[in-house]
Image (cartoon, rainbow, N blue to C red; front, side, top):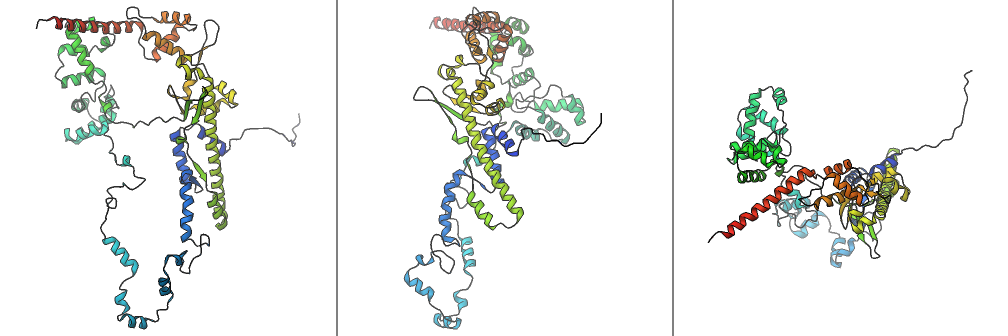
Length: 539
């Protein structure tokens, strides 16, 4: 087969990811906080962008600036450069200003003194000195208050929260004087998590610091006496033991209880009573003391500041019985393209590089405004379709939540599934039943036992929780019993699925629930018996 060269024409279509398209996709999946940050950066970078709420201020500025401008608009100007200068003076003043004062000698003869005595210094220097010597007349001028400032922000003066690391570091500087011990202590403090715990194995700490294990243990023993009690523990038992020693309640019986917390979690009171060597009343008091301790002593110190969840969409009942969906205008950045500024610049710019820069800035600003508008329209369209699909949830509750996937919404609004996925990411909807993430309404489907309409996985979880909450303490429902009752309600589900949903909702097993409810029932009966015996005692 011979090799030859030839020219061919081929026509094909391909999707090109332009920078503008990539920007629109990026904006679509940003949360309202991230979007605000992005827009603020663009406002600083692009001189042709401006906030829409500044439009009123920018509209008033030309009217005021017209009095001090160089143009002819807004009235005539005098030769002194001040627009409308003749309107601010009385006729006598105009006559005095237009009068010729004569030469220097004539002026000095008229004033009967030299001009150096009359105008001893420049007016600007005198005004500057007077302003400097003048004492502030208001509290705001002293810099201590800003009650008259509209931009005054009280939160800017709030003191920062004390973190657990800072609190421990302050105590460390007092507890140790040797530099080596302070270095070991600071290294251990840096390992403490936000709950106040250290890693279980500190062997690597000694190797990394080049210190002996005994030195590390000695510093750790001092750190565990720091405030708050229980801090710098390596496990829950050690944390509770430190707090009990602080309260002088760490006796042998309490030590046996702390070392067998797994039995306490299983509600195996009989085994605990045997290990501790106490009776029922004493073991109940000991368990009560354990419950009053703090298992996470470091959580009372500030860590990361929580951000308030702001909904992107509001859903309200409509007057016609339907639902009214609207965007939260507070989360939508309002930016405009300053076409007037660009027109003025295009007339004065002469360099090609400057023209290219401002042309690109205009194009980027226009694309950003369009992308923000398209983002808002897409969010509203997706939210409206979600509300239409999940009408039963908004009307009757979570039990009527329907199974829904991205493809159903995408086909309904004629968009791609990836677009719907980006829209539902980090977006929240405020409804009459609470605030939910948009992804909450997309749940898997569980087949119906009678071949009818499928059930939503979230609705099935709600049904399982209702069954467990209403169960009789004398007849705890096992997972098999829950499966039978769900199938009686028309839900075809496997036992392992019930166990998975139950564990996801942090509901214990039937054995653990039986122990918990029997223990709670026993506590109620013992309290009632003690109250009855107290009431029957002779006065």
